[in-house]
Length: 289
Ligand SMILES: Nc1ncnc2c1ncn2[C@@H]1O[C@H](COP(=O)(O)OP(=O)(O)OP(=O)(O)O)[C@@H](O)[C@H]1O
Ligand SMILES: [Mg+2]
Image (cartoon, rainbow, N blue to C red; front, side, top):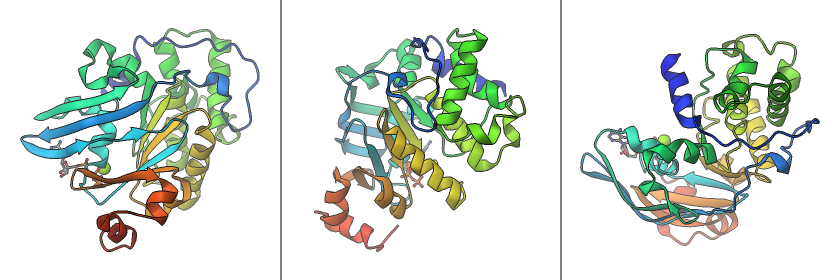
């Protein structure tokens, strides 16, 4: 518990949470006023990543559009997760890892950010993990966790935040009568949505999701997909997915990677209907996966 809690504490310490001056929660979609207000653009320039001398990402230049769902697709081991993790410096802990180039959020190069800035960065660019990892505490406390770290202790305010974000992820009706029971008792799909609520409660502007539905049953998967589609009004979502069908369903923007390189990037229509590169065509036709 301590290791997990420490990670979240580190990620969220020193946040500058905006005021939660609201009384009503919306039934499903997140109200725009709760989304982090930034127009900063996320992109990479000539990004290279090496682990123990092996080049994992090769001269990656991508641009993540605002308020859209960007899907990163490509065969296993092509560098999707590595790229996703550079966006909020989660690769820092990988032994033997070296990076050069730029990952820019507006005018700031994330790769050059001082470690004291990382908590603020990760508050702006939050990651929803592949496997649901509820903290070993109640449902309520899971959602309130980041807010408390930030210094919000007023019960009424926390109640509103918890209710709002549990509604946003479509979980409120399923858990409202057992908010104080352990999060670990929820089903896998419910835990995944709870973790999403926890990520949203600190109001990132970018939401990174690494195969967030891969451990879920089809119904829970669809709920998360539906939720992402709702959330893009207020958040910019970058999602790694192994499932081409999922990308076809929800992507607005697509990045296709192969062996550490970005082979093709563009709107979902462009990449899926008019792929330019032979490798993209083969991948979309199922020649390799
Ligand atoms: N900590 C590490 N040490 C050594 N090599 C690593 C490490 N993490 C990743 N790699 C290597 O980097 C390459 C890219 O890995 P990455 O996890 O980014 O791929 P991926 O596209 O997300 O794959 P998958 O679809 O299987 O999740 C792989 O060859 C992997 O073996
Ligand atoms: Mg991966």
